[in-house]
Image (cartoon, rainbow, N blue to C red; front, side):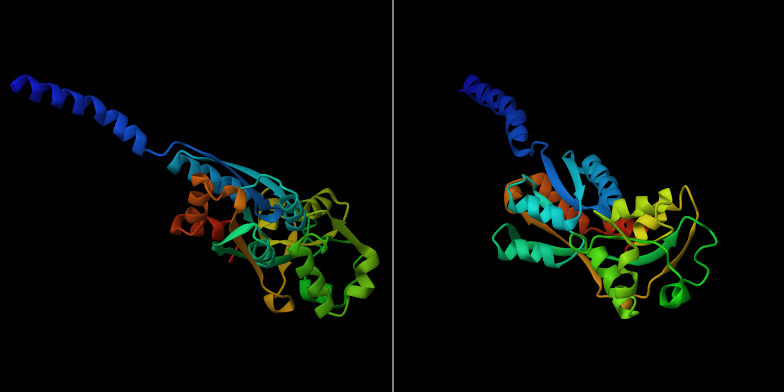
Length: 254
């Protein structure tokens, strides 16, 4: 009898590590499609989440319009961090994303910026009636920040006048490069990218009033491809946490 008890105890102790291993989730990898304006923030957040969770997050950045087209064409993304609220909602309506995971993660702001420290002394006056030779914006056909730039210029009734002088970037990252390289003396860019550019070149800038365009609400959603991916689900939950929200504000978002 005593021998049987000892054998039973030995079998139980030997099985405990196996049970613990079975209950511990294995590290997973998730591919996240991210709007260009949020790429740097997303990489920093992904690294922090990876350290905390053991999961790995791979970031693929492009304009929201291009990411949407890629998702519709079968690109194996597990989640989308969009530069607007409409695109994730559209994917939910089309059955390409999980509506229960849809949430807003940031609100963007638009800045008139130049790499020339003396160029933007009175930003409002410059946009309202100043001489603008070339102005870089993201293409409104693909990028929500380009839509906001167009709306701001329409608000000022200068859109038609300035259209021939616009330098269109495929996304906000390219539009920012036009300004930092000097290809365009001015740009209407996300505040997040202006903060990044100012680390190497102070330049000059002015924040466009939020009332000049529709709010730039950025939403995230879990895509159909990632429905069973714990890394993707975990990352979206992490974005809602206090630590991530604080970091997002630090990158220039409301």
